[in-house]
Amino acid sequence: MQGKNKRLLLGIALLVVIVLGFWGYRLLGPVALAEGYMYEDNSRMVYAKATAENDQVNVEVTLSKLLVEDTIPRLQTETSAWTGTMENNTLTLQEKKTGQKLQAKLSADGLLFQGPFAQGEPTETMLTASDKQTYDDKLAAWTKSVEQEATQKKKELEEQQAKEAARVAFAKKVEQTGRLTADMLESAQYLQEIQFTEELQFSKDQVVELQGLLDELTTYAKQPGLSKMEYDVMSGTLGSMKVLVDGMNAMENTIAQKKKRIQDIIAVLETDMKDAQTVWEEIKASVTDAEKREKALTEAVKTGSDAIAQANERLGTLEKELASVKASANRLYQQAVAVLEQTRVKYGY
Image (cartoon, rainbow, N blue to C red; front, side, top):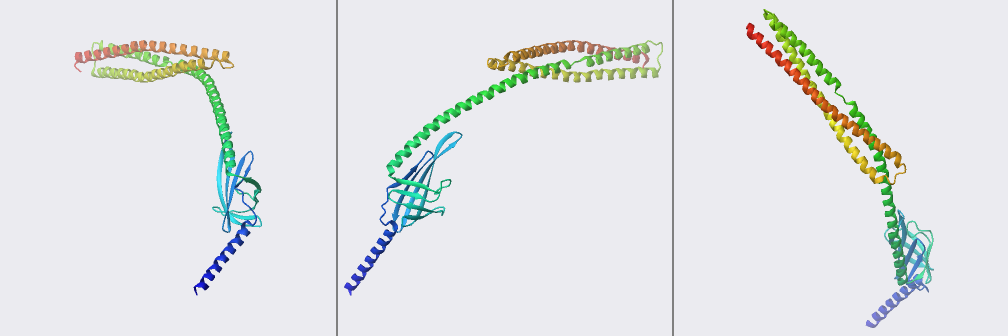
C-alpha cells in the first residue's frame, strides 16, 4: 500500500515538472533574456528589465525625458510596471496600475514595444540589449550634462531678467522725471491762482461801512435831545456793526483754508523738486535727449521756486493787512459801544 502511494506521489511530481516545463517553454522557449534593454536619443532614455516568473513575464520600464521650461532643461523620470504572457516571442502586457494593454516583441537582442508605453511616446520603440551598469553610467552622464546646462541657462536667465529689470527701472525714472516736471508746473500754476484780493477787499469794505455806522451813532449822540425811539435806532445800529464784525471773523475761516491749501501745495512742490533733481542725477548720463529734458526740468524747478517765493510773499502781506483791518474793525466797534453806553447813561434809557 505504501509503495503504491509513493508511486502516486512520484507521478504527481513528475506531472508538475512536465507542466512547468511546458509553460516555461511556451513562455521563453529558446529565448534567453538580456540583463536589460535600453533606448536613447537626444530627448529621452528608456531602460527596461524583463523577468520571468512561472507563466508570467514582468517588465519594469524606466523612462527619463528631457523637458525645457523657460529655456531651462530638466530630466523627468517615470516608471511603469507591466505583466503578461509571451507566446512565439510576442508579449501581451498590461500595466499594473492603469490597466493599459500593450504588445511587444522580446528576444535576447532587443525589446520592441508595439505601442506607446507612456503618454507622448511613439507607437514603436526598439530597445537593444544592455546591462544595468551601462544604463546607470549613461543616465548619470546625461543627468550631469543637463544639470550643467540648466545652471548655465539659469545664470543667463537671471542676467537677462536683471537687465530687463534695470531697463524697466530706468524707463520708469525717465517717465518719473517727465511727470514730476509737469506736476511742478501744475503746482506752480495752482499757487499763482490762489489770491486773497477778494477777501481783503471784503474786509476793507466792512471797515468803511463800520466807520459810516459809527458816524451815524455819533451824530445821534450829539443831538441836544434824544428820544427813546432814536436811542433804539442807535442800539440797532450797534447790532448791525456787530454783524459786520462777525462777518469779518467768518471770512477769516475762508482765508485760513486758502492758507492751508497754499502750504500743502508748497510742501508737495518742494518734494517734487527735490525728487526730480535726485532722479535726474541718476539717469541723465544715459538719457538720449538729456539736454532737452534737463532744460525743461530746470525751467520747471525755477518756475516752482518763484511760485513758492511769491506765495510766501503774498502770505506775509496778507497777515499784515488782515491784522490792520481787524484792528480797525475792533476799534470802530468798541468806539460805537462806548458812544451808545454814554448816551444810555446821559438819557437814562
